[in-house]
Amino acid sequence: MSKITRRDFINGTLMAAGATMLPSGLFSQSLLGRLDPVYYPPALTGLRGDNPGSYTSAHKRAWSKKSDWGPTTKLKEDYDLIVVGGGISGLSAAFFYQQEHGKDKKVLILDSHDDFGGQCARNEHTVGDATRVMFGGSQTIVSSHARSKTTLKLFKDLGIDLDRLKTAFDVDFYKRHNLRGVTYFNKRKFGVDKVVKHPFCYYQTFVQGLLRPELSYEEAVKQTPLREKGKEQLLRVLKGGVHELKVPKSKLEKYISTHSYFDYLKNNLGIDDPLVLEMARNSCIDNLGQGADVATIEDALTTGALGFDPATLKDVLGKKKYEKYIKEYGYIMVDEDPYIHHFPDGNASVARLLVRKMIPNVGPGDSYEDIVLSKFNYSELDKNSNIVRIRLNSTVVNVRRDGDPNSSSDLFVKYINDKKSYQVKGKGVVMACYNVMIPHIVPDLPEEQAAALRRNMRLPLFYSTVGLKNWRAMKEMEIGVAISPGNMHQAVLMDFPVSMGGHNVTKTPDDPCVILMAGCPFGETVGAPPIEQFREGRYRMLSLKFEDYEKEIREHLTGMLPKGSFDFDRDVESITVNRWSHGYGYRGSALFDSDLPEMVRRGRKPFGRITIANIDSGLSSYIHVAIDQAARAVKELG
Image (cartoon, rainbow, N blue to C red; front, side, top):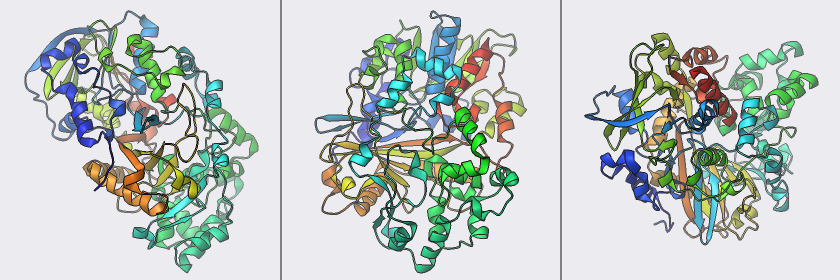
């Protein structure tokens, strides 16, 4: 029996649901305030991210076409803007709207989750007397030099000093503790539990300062539990690359964007060993999100798949074009674009800065550094006296116009809280939610636009954060990042070494820390179309109970770490599983869904006083895209 002391799945769910367990008539007054000081989602562990109950009403609307929600309470609340979705795009839309139209403009933000921020999620782990904060989703501000003026201005308005922020990252941490990329082969898949001190793929190259392998390819391959045929084929993959394509350089760029990585492995290199192909399929993880079995060669190269060094993009583009590419777009997989603009809780700090700007009484402090430890009072989010209000645990199921879409001045928004229906009124609506849901919520959209939106799928992923009382076993095995091709969690990472705002990086292996275990669920059929795999992976991910995740984490860490230094029941204090059923944006490729960019352009068009934001409408997974799409949506409102 596990001895983990955790505010676990059951308690976490009850505390989150507490916002919906009081009399419904109190909600529009100050329901969340009645839970103070108990209601504090970042401290909950167990199943988080898409917390249990956050998707129930949405699934009933989308899957069962439910429209009868019982009597609707029409609240006496009128807003200048209603935002559907309280993630970074929705919060940014509210902020931009007030900037554009005045601080006196009333804004309501509705979100189905029990916390704001969407995937900019904050996890807090209490380990002994220490509280360690960690990201449960969006990690960092990527390639800040290549961002839009809109995004950079927002960061400035929030007081974020990007030059100072990057100095908070301790680039010598991994060298100081001799931590590197390794590969963990588990007994269930490979016949034996074994750690080889080589990552084989290049997934981990975005981790700034992580030690490079000391083992040669030949030495590392010898240590793997593969059979001789598999070892020979793995070495062949590792020594492969763009030079194996035999394509004229003038045609190379187009070729890699239109040809399959798995076809390259099978046809160019003659790879058929199932375990080598399994290693390849799992080698991109959340750098790509989908399995490498449906990746182009370009996808594989730029996300560090088995056998492709991302730095060789320079050989494809040429030095001048490569440097221009990094300057204009960024490329976090190479040293020229360091991945170091982190807050300790990832981009949750950006979400919290936005909320504190719009609702100043929510938490103490006035700088981007003190936001890290600022304890938010959630009872402030939905006060009647606020100009901007954030209403959690509220799933929007219908947005309708009062008359002609181009001339109607009022919009009515219906949402569900505690299985009860409420309606509010606004002059404009920004749909900053999962775009596939919009046709179900706005049923009178033109069919062409609705059809386009239904194509805009996002892929599932989960980030499990694990509070450890010490990390001596990680140190002993020299693990900074452990690629784990046989496990549900395909990578294990030490937390990024960031110190700021009074929150300091773990100093020694005897101190508490939080590790990240990342997974992207694929379908069972290798090579099946990505969208089919996303549906299958999402269903499997949501069907698992917390105990299932805990069991897998127990087996994973116990098999990977030395018995004398690690005992799961003794050393693991807490587990938070952040499930994102609609996580990263899916871009499509020449192999699958090549028309997605056009579908996105059609889908995000304004519909009268209803406009559309979120990363879905920008074909990306990055925070700056969510911000830029919010700015566009607000501008389209006029």
